[in-house]
Image (cartoon, rainbow, N blue to C red; front, side, top):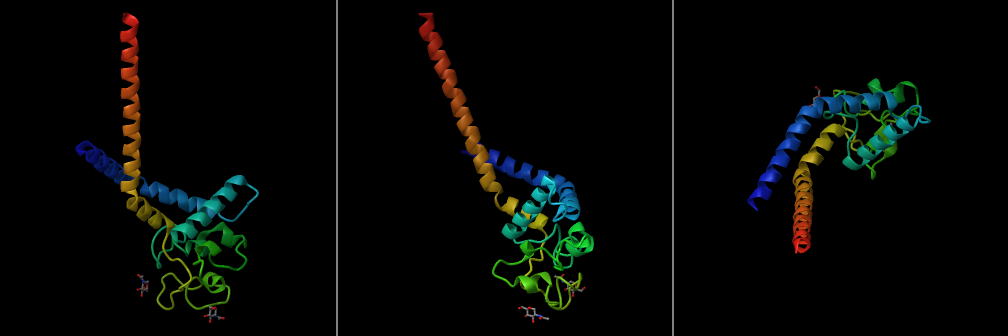
Length: 185
Ligand SMILES: *[C@@H]1O[C@H](CO)[C@@H](O)[C@H](O)[C@H]1NC(C)=O
Ligand SMILES: *[C@@H]1O[C@H](CO)[C@@H](O)[C@H](O)[C@H]1NC(C)=O
């Protein structure tokens, strides 16, 4: 039991350190992919995949863009300030993709199509109206929250796999030994 706890702890720490070390790189590649590939040249399979992954992530993690909160230029605002999706006019006048909107919310108001004051048309920084239909937090942040929340579960699965593999090894070793013993008679 103690060894399982130690392995769990080490796994959790390693994951934590790994996420910390990788965070800059992960954020940068998420940003580059969003800016250059989201919602443009969808006949390229890579762009289509990037777009689908971003939509999935934004819907399921309830986030928008990459990093930071409501006043960050890298969260919801990255679409209107940086993305090719916006610059090339693939956005059909929306300021953020539909996947940045609460599924029970108002898409028109969320994406800024009816000229509602506040986000996503104005800001950042956002001082007045906060759009209640729009996710304001970056997906990198929500991803890290999600991973940290599931570290114990992920560690548990890793430990369970190791135990199963060890049992398999021990079993096959004893089987091998007993066969050799039978052979030597
Ligand atoms: C836009 O839509 C929202 C939600 O339906 C509504 O509250 C707001 O008044 C609308 N704004 C304009 C300018 O039509
Ligand atoms: C965003 O910036 C505005 C203006 O500087 C400030 O009033 C507001 O409190 C900030 N919001 C958050 C959540 O930091």
